[in-house]
Length: 434
Length: 53
Image (cartoon, rainbow over all chains, first blue to last red; front, side, top):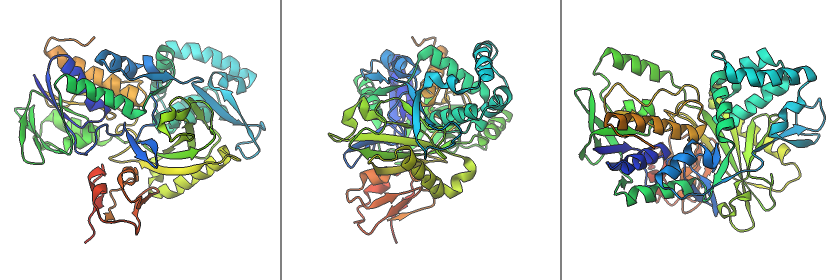
């Protein structure tokens, strides 16, 4: 079978490698001169910054992505961060910011800050929600209904902001509890050696050694549909490429612009209406350089009392090669709410003043401020809203951050989605994955 | 070079600019150091960089 992949982001490359391993012929078409989409490195002033992601794999070497990479024969090393996360809290109990000093507590001790009543409630809730996960409402609704505690909502906002680039009010509680379940299942985050590009390079090795082809600077301008089936693509040089399967890594909405959506059927209209409602998540990443470590470990520092910054990591504590010798690379992430996108510069200024308080007395330099929204977002489908990998057309599948698997954070969600799509494709051919 | 409204501020162009002529804060700005080499255009994922007329 011949497979055509649109986009060489993580989802596209994972799909290509899976199908090559299963013995199929694969061509990947990438619009840009570089591969990796929003999951690779860009060099800036000697630092290995990234095109998007924060050089981190949410569930580390044993999570969905780590497992899939090993299965594919990638030899990237993913080093587990220890501690997984710390939480910066104001030193004065009634203070709501970091200006009077702070202390960092281990993530696993977050329950200790609750009142006695809420501590008891939490113990009960941890067990009951695992058996009966909430079906309706947002994570913020769940917190205010069950815990009525400012601390609970702050932790939820900080965690959802860091992991999903969303406020707790914009994430279904069911999705958060699925994520928590995955944290029990797969454990915490890890840093791929070489950063995001460390992963991408090994995937490209797998693809080329299996005879797959990657065409960079080659934009797909059209998907050819015949009898409600995807049968090929046209590249911007006018060349037609025929195939049995088309996999698109550019999300449901952008993909729908590549075919004639006027072939009106009831299924098609329903699909187009549902994907129009998708909202990509937005966020800002502020990259910092310092001589001394600002955090001191490679896990996440959650900052629930900052105005905008949700969490920060310092990957050079595991992989010093991501910065020039003697330097550290620290990356802060802040979620940007949809209604604040029109005042993005003010949002960035709030993030910068947060950092001045979080790292008060420390010496650092702002390297680059990177923002993501709209058609180049944090996630094409905000977590908890992902459609499936299927489209109304036979042979046309969507992978990547616009079609993540349930309960999957960021790139682990992409791996879960790819797995689902590949399973479906191979099932049709009576093949199986794993 | 000119930055269009499509720019989201991802900073990818700044990393490929040989002259460090791009500043980014929410959106990219081309400074006077630009030598019109057009390299940034190819790397922009939003097709937000256009040649000045």
